[in-house]
Amino acid sequence: MRTKYVFLYLILILFYSACSNAQNSKEIWNEKQLMPPSELAKIINDSTIKSPYIFSIGPAGFIKNAIDVSDAMDKNGIEKFQKILEKLPEDADIVIYCGCCPFDVCPNIRPSFKLLNKMKFTNHKLLNLPKNLKVDWIDKGYPMN
View 1: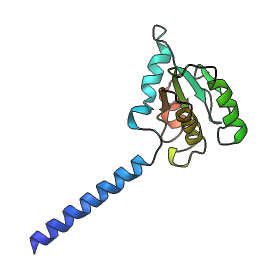
View 2: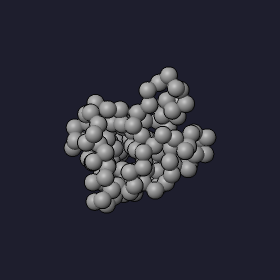
View 3: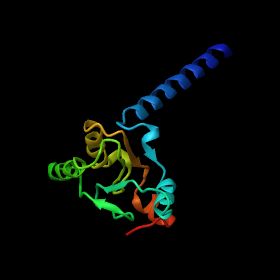
């Protein structure tokens, strides 16, 4: 009888693990393409390190050196972003962020990241702001414009 419970418990763990992996794999970026806020803040604050192109693709606020693209959820925002990107080499270091709201409901990050993928950029990252810009960047004292 105890063996049955252990077996059921193991099956539940495997099922939960598979569901967790499925949720993570549905995003169009991978873990390596998520940049920790502390890493970008360090780059911005160190003048000896070449800074990536930083694009604000939402309404949340402007990180130091960020280029304002405006909301990327609509056609005009994406077209504006595409025109800017067309001037950059495919291997340009690019970081995008929105920060308006949690990742899972953000209307701006997926269209922007999808565009970067479609345009075959090879060094693009999403700033890892899972909650929002205030909590994950501003409250930590990272540089703003």
